[in-house]
Image (cartoon, rainbow, N blue to C red; front, top):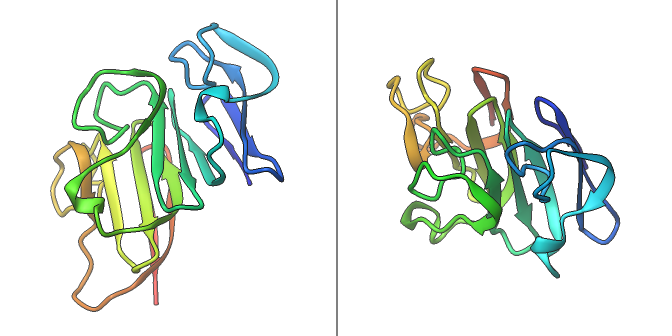
Length: 171
């Protein structure tokens, strides 16, 4: 898998390691350097096997083969989904009651928001919501993952995020 943020690039290798390079002012490349010139393994993810990756304006998000989500970097709008607006220098497990029984299979990132697709067919979003990009039916931002509003019984099969908008595909 490959992904790009505003000024950083990401890839997953055959071992499930996340590699990052580019502008890293908010530590979105996993290193406390203003830039990372070459693809470099995000060592702080340790032995986790990543299966999905996404990059926003200043944050990075991965999902693992265990269905967990880790996020790091800029968090001024809650895009890391950890309930705060404090940026993270290292990957943090996104632990939220809304995700307790979910297994995340794909991640997407806009400028300052994050989308999560779950094996159950549900989708969640967090971060900046001023243009309705969180899909909650409001223009509110959220520091924790909130369910994307879809009609009852509708299964979400794919997600994508633009700079200030989001897309979901349903069955």
